[in-house]
Length: 114
Length: 113
Image (cartoon, rainbow over all chains, first blue to last red; front, side, top):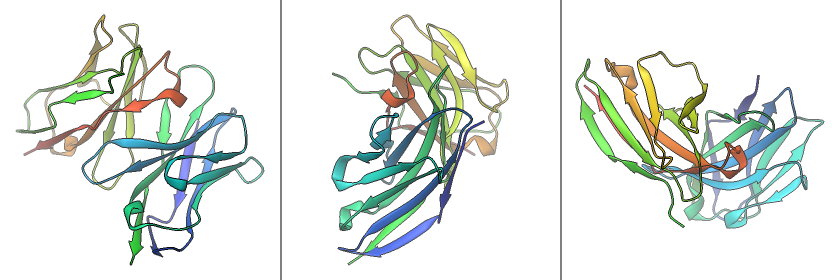
């Protein structure tokens, strides 16, 4: 069974500060890993994905994440927060074989303080 | 290339009623997955449709059912609505069910009163 744990339901950072959102996963087979962003009253937008190629994955809007198998982690970072980054972020995992259900974490709301 | 379109965007139903939500998949995609997102929660997998058949199901009761049509569009039907069914329902399309190729729609906000 696959699962995702996001540490911290709310994270606040100052504008210009480092953004770090934490995600740990569990999967019995090599996983695909994703970060999605959701703005209020909208659907999910894919930020980036890991599909067993490079372990450091670059996404849209300056975000990146590093797959660390030994730590079963896939933390999301951005060097400098912008006001427009305020949103809810979901980490998700999928098994790489068979039919591919995506399992989401409970989300982290990012607040950016001016 | 068109994205995923869901309709309606919002609706309000009364407890006990039935509802049908619709999803048009992205051009070239043949798989549709449905998710329920309760307020303050992450999306929960309901089921997936591939080649007009259910191809996997999450922990949802049988009153949640679906269809996929030959053009790959899909419907989610919920019977005997309960207050806890109030949520954002998200549809995602992909090719051959590949999770790394999911495209999500903007969702349907269902309120049950």
